[in-house]
Amino acid sequence: MKVEDWKIESCNKQIKAKYMVKIAQFEDLEIWQKSMDLAVKAYHLTKKGNFKLEYSIQDQIIRYSFSISNNIAEGFEYNSNNQFIRFLKISKG
Image (cartoon, rainbow, N blue to C red; front, top):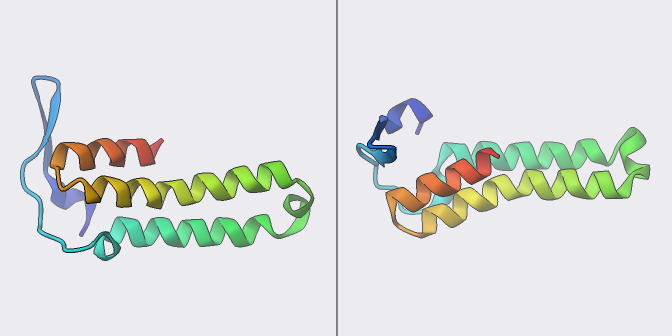
């Protein structure tokens, strides 16, 4: 599913999803899959070069990159369009 398919509109300063395709599990969301790919790439990149000596920065980048997929999964589990949109915004940063 692509972001363009969401058809999100603003109404009275509240964001409402016009429609949402029924997906059984968050692992099927393309956005979640891509966020996991990003997290794995970030993990591997921080294990190279100067990052492997900077443990605090390395840890922060890894935690942040995995928090994107975690927020998408958490928002999906609420079974509410408003909550899901809220967690998508959180994962966006």
